[in-house]
Length: 204
Ligand code: ITT
Image 1 (cartoon, helix red, strand yellow):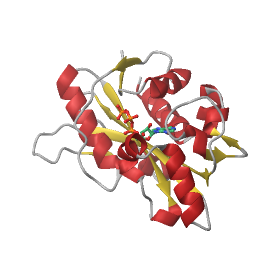
Image 2 (cartoon, protein in one colour):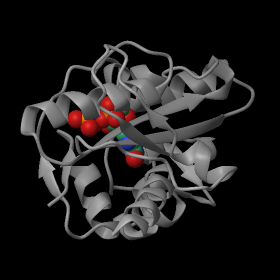
Image 3 (cartoon, rainbow, N blue to C red):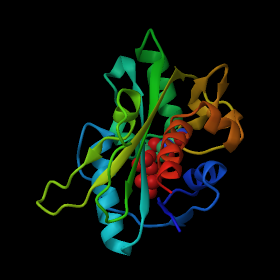
């Protein structure tokens, strides 16, 4: 069984649309401070693996607004719970000429074994699944899978999804106007889930 580590049931819904067998592990791992999502997901995967001693997949995501040099990025959760996503939309409309933004998702997989990135492959697959060794001297490899989607910040539209979904538009629709399956077809998380599924299927 694969545990999808998150406190967010919306993420689990999307993960299940791609990986039907995952179970939610509602574990609030301590998030390290980093300007990048990769180290946060890797540290989270190690903490979650040590917590359950079983295979885990951690999901760390964030909204990066181009005109704000990537803010809120790794602080997206804090910004959502403090000012809220409608205020982010209004702030962007007031302060920025361009509403370009990207959504990123990094999945970190850890099962306590000596994991390898995709065997003998290079280029795109290497960047989607770099192996990350432990930085505290204990070897506990994590493999990372990243998805990135470029879109636009808009005024809120739609009632589905969660978090920033109503204010992030891709291909003419906000994520909140898409079903979880459709969102996966267009989303940062869908890309990362596909990359993980390809790698995981290739191992068995
Ligand atoms: P966990 O850390 O427990 O997984 P979380 O919701 O806090 O739950 P993140 O730290 O990855 O997860 O999320 C950072 C913020 O981005 C948070 O406010 C989320 O609601 C939001 N978010 C993450 N993925 C999103 C998505 O696909 N669509 C819209 N908002 C998203």
